[in-house]
Structures are given as C-alpha cells and as structure tokens.
Length: 350
Image 1 (tube, rainbow, N blue to C red):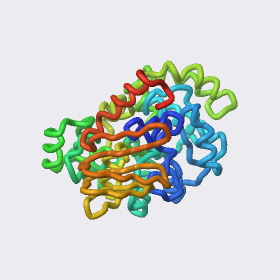
Image 2: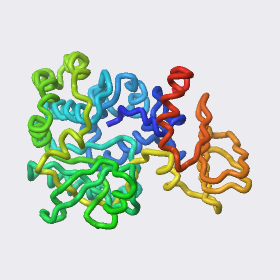
Image 3: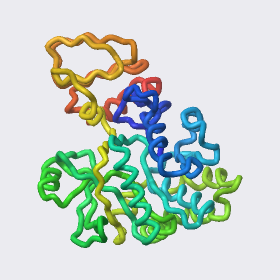
Image 4: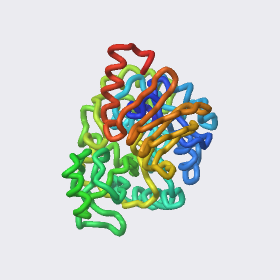
C-alpha cells in the first residue's frame, strides 16, 4: 500500500512527493524501495503488487523499474485501506485463485529483517492452512497513543493468539493501562491471509464495498480493469481495513513478532530511531552547529548548515519552500499547519 500523503511528515513529505518515496536515512533507498527489497527475500518479484494513486505512477516506475506496469495498481482517488486491499485481492485472485497474501504499508521500518522474514513465512504457512485472518502484533515498550492496540484472548493455536478486541489510538491514560496489563499489543498494520478468506470477510463485514467491486470480477487481470476501477472505485466507502473488517470479524488471530518495527508515522518516531549526539540532538543529512541546545531534531536538505542556539525539544525541518519550527512534543499540530498553509497560502506549499 503506497498511496498515502504522509502529512505528519510535512514539510519533507508533500502531496507531489510523499514520504514513502523519500530516503530518510541516507541509504540511497526510499522507504518504498526498502519495503520491496525486504519482501523480495521471500516473495518472487513478479508476485509483488503496489497499490498507489494515479499521480504517483511515474514515481513508482522510477523507483521500482524491476516491476512491470501490470504490477502497479493505480487508484483514481484515495479511499483508505479497505477498498485498496479489496481491489488488490480481486486482482490477485484473477491471477491465482488460491493465493496467500501479505498486506504491508510501504513506509514502515524493520530493523531485524531475518526475524521479520521468519515471522512472515510462519504467517503464510498459517494462512495456507486456515480461513482465519492474521495480523502481526508488536509488544509495546511505551504507552504510545499513535498506534492501534490488539487485546489477545486466552484461546490460541500454537503461536497464534485469538484476538479479543481492537482499539484504535487510545488516549494516554488508557494506553498506560493497556501496556501495564500485558494483554495488549501494538497493531503493526501488517496482515496475512488467503485471498478467499479476506474476500469472504469483506462480503460479510463490508457488503457495500463488495457491491462496488464484485461486478468487475470478469475484468480483473484484463486490459479493461483500469477503466472499471476508474468508474467504480470513487464510489467505494472511505473506510480502513481495521474499522471495516478486523474489528468486526470473529476469526482474527495475531502472531507476535519482535523484528524492530516502527511505522515511521511522525517526526517523533524518526527522532526515537535516529542516532543522537551527547545532548540528544538528531541531525538528518544536514550539518549543524548547536549551542546550548538539546533534544532537538534538525532535518534540512543535504549540504545545508543549521546554526541553532538555546533550543530544547524542537523540530526544525526545511524542505523546498517551507521551513517548519515547532515543539517536538506538539507535532500533532502539523496537520493543522498543513491545513492552514493550504487555505491561506495555496497548494504551492503543500
């Protein structure tokens, strides 16, 4: 899944060049490229499909020249993760009627790739042998309010725990209770299932979505698929896979993983993962001279120098025509900044 805007990473992430196409760590590979590199260790490249927005077709082709045009599914408009996954599932089933599928966001960071590949393989084996839906869970190390949480049931099948409840992004006090209970795990947003199992779940939980996409079953995988999608996809409900299916289905299991996962959703998450100087400052790509400053993250274009004095706990980020300076702990306000800039200044800054 590679169609998001990544507005919480503004101004680095822009509508025309969102975060999944950016190289945050100076490795020479974008988050999307790193994701494909990771899955290529276990899945043949011809079996990897990218679902993205029409406007990013050129970027995907540029960054992933090894994929054919038929492996890039272009949405005419954004409709959240449930329609994205449903369309991809219909497309894949047209090519392989009994395929097992891994669904992955394109902008996550995995630090322990060997452990990750082992976990995914275990999940694929599970999906091949059952009609259950599987999500990968992460043991929380802090009461994070930016992630969804999964409560596990006592019922289990080997390493696979039945899911009792899903909770989307709780308030801090509730997140603290979750972590202390030991019963809750972060929802990684990584899913594994058989194509028929997920389409059955869509029919049961989101019939209004299936009503829009099922009539195209005879055209998926053909030359007229795109025309059908352009006409029908915009009418699909705007709903996430978590809310639309996973929270309602009674056959959801979780496999717990320890593979150094982060969803890289915010500047704060990037700060936590990045190397720091003796005053806990992070500098990304740029050069810095810091005086009496600590706990800051500085992200400027390569080759630029930031000279900073008497700042504690700030985000200083510059990209193209925008400079953002705000308290790191208040970065939740970035979406408001983006909205205000769009309304008052126009699209040039978005």
